[in-house]
Amino acid sequence: MPFFILITLLFVLLTLFALYFYFEAKRKKEAQDAKKALTVRVEKMKKRFKSEAQQWMFSGALSKQDESTMIRLPNYFFVFQPITPENVEHYEQSLESVLLTVNEKVLLVPNNSDDVTVTCEPLCQFVQSLPSAAQGYNASFYRNDLPVLIQKLRDAEIEPVDERNQEETEVA
Image (cartoon, rainbow, N blue to C red):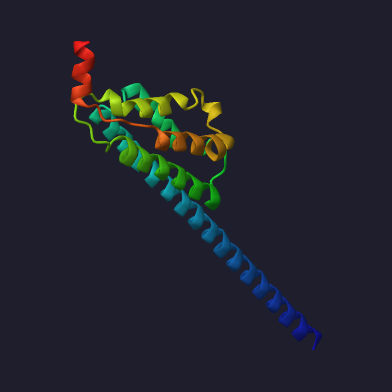
């Protein structure tokens, strides 16, 4: 009889160990899949932002140097902060806000002249306001400073150049 109880207890113990390791492996796999999904979201947004920055450069709105400065925004976000769902959400919101502001507010301003510098001035000021060193792209910058810079870019007055006003200044 004690032999039977010992065998039964051993069997139950082995079953519990097997279940524990099964669920632990499943939990680790789910965590790994979630981390991979976050990384895919980050890479997708980074690729989109870089593509848009290249288009801005090709359109003449940014110089090559300004484009490389703009690309620091997505590249340095996770250097000083971990990849978490909250940080990825903030990353996507921040970069989306920059993209929308530049594409809608700055680049779509009707301009009667061929002078690209008029519409690029606020964008160039935005780029010059970005940190020059990698240490400047910390969590505080992305949480506090970048939204202020984006709002300044949104609020920038971009006046289309009127040809009559331009001729009057040339005559005078």
